[in-house]
Image (cartoon, rainbow over all chains, first blue to last red; front, top):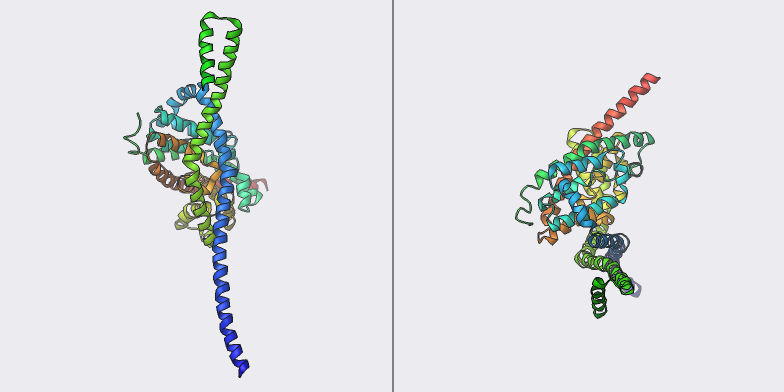
Length: 195
Length: 207
């Protein structure tokens, strides 16, 4: 008699216990995920984003104060201020010998992006060219990384051997093509903006 | 401030008389000022970048990281198997949906591991397609390639300082990027197929 009541009440208790444990575990799990997400975010900012900002800021300080910026603007204006110039840039970046050199870390594309942004701000390049310019400076993306990228996809050595020239050749066509597509996609954008 | 003014006035006073010591030290002082000015300028720019970009970026990164962890990146594995099928209707899956989701969930270097579900002949095209997406995606989802944000941010900053809103640019960059990766995937697949058949033909001749 007493044993049965004990076991029943014990069963009820354990059900409640289970529930509490489950709730605790779920909440703990969610909070853990959130916390880890926050930690990852701060880690990314400190490791990847702040160093690049520091380095870009130094370059901008030098470029602004030394007058290199004005000289560069004269070089950049005829190139980046019209479709033909942008096509020239994209073809240059896509040349199979040059593209793997320009690739690593997208550092060069990022510096050029910042320079073009400054020129857009100063009015030497019309803001409507922002979109085609983004594609003109980037046909070399990942060209330095093809063997590693393919290896990450568990490709055979023969595939890598063919894959490298295949991608590099393809860029020569799709690089300029992407600029043309972006040019038409940017029609009507920021038309009222700029000087 | 008063010190720099004093230095500036001595330089100005020293200039016309061309007195050597004063002129020399004056020149030194203005050179030093110019030198520090370079870094003050850079520092202001740095603060501008931090204030303008980091706060939103951190919160957005936390949100997307949480989302990815709750959904679980392993769920797109099945999509990789679907994308491996031959046939023209699977081209957009292979070179548009799969690269988009891989880059979004697995981010920059790990996205290329999704190529393991595809047959060898599609791997270079898939790599080409997904690597071409790591910059267009940063306009809206910077977590996907946080180390290479300035391709987009550099140019977008130009628009911001003109007083325009970058939303339009970010969306169009993403959409054009999607069109471009599809074209790139298809074209690279064709080129790979031609190169592979030429190689097997050559081997046949040699043997």
